[in-house]
Length: 156
Image 1 (tube, rainbow, N blue to C red):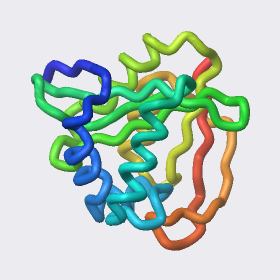
Image 2 (image 1 turned 120 degrees about the horizontal axis):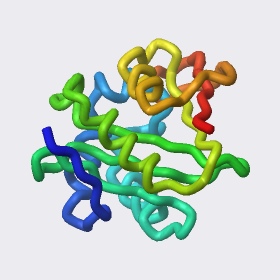
Image 3 (image 1 turned 60 degrees about the horizontal axis):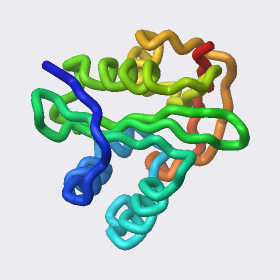
Image 4 (image 1 turned 90 degrees about the vertical axis):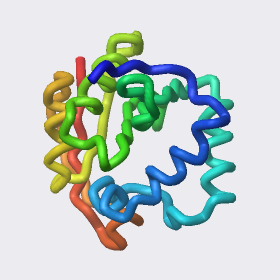
């Protein structure tokens, strides 16, 4: 599959909302919105993400079709990355390709990432992009409805 990144368009909102409501994806991501079905909260959050000068959010396309999102943002002074790919496209290398494209375009180092410890697929994506584990934390995760162990990773 040919993977590209582009600016998030208004027309992407419905696809992003649907993708981020998928129950299996929410369970795997764990650290998600408190209520993935709250469209008003989603729209407000997406609006803040798209208008922030410190967030670089991109739509991921695979073979020209919407596949997900990828972003870099600053949290507590650290530049972090995140990504979300439609579940029907998992295990095709799309997340890895999208993250590599984002990392190549992001000038700040180090970059950080966080992943639920039991999310093996996402951990592999981060490994392939060169991220290494530098810590562990346990935090409440809305998507799991319980405290979840989270790995903290860094790319120099």
